[in-house]
Amino acid sequence: MAKAESYKNASAENLKKRLPKIIFHCEFSQKRGPRAFRMLRSRDREVNFKNFPHVDYSEIYLLEGGYCNFYPQYPVRKYFIENIFVNIENRNFVKVDI
Image 1 (cartoon, rainbow, N blue to C red):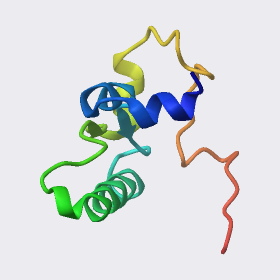
Image 2: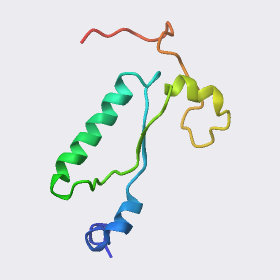
Image 3: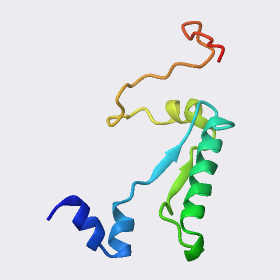
C-alpha cells in the first residue's frame, strides 16, 4: 500500500499518532519561537475551523526558557545533529541587514 493511500485510509486516531510532536524554540523563547508556535496553531485552527476544537497538531510545545537554558541542563544529547550551543552574541555571528 502506498504511503498516500495509507494516510487516506487511516483512522483519525491512527493519523494523529503519525503526526510529529513539534517543539518550537529559539535562543531565549521570547520572540521567534513563540511567533512560530502561534503561527502554526493559528493556521491549524483555520484549517479545522469547522471541526472546532479539533486540530491536526494537538501536541505542539514551546521550550520554556529557550535553548540557552535547555542545553546545559541536558548533557546527554545523542539525537542532536551538532552537539554544540553558540550564543547569538558570539562574535562569529554576522549581522545581516535585511
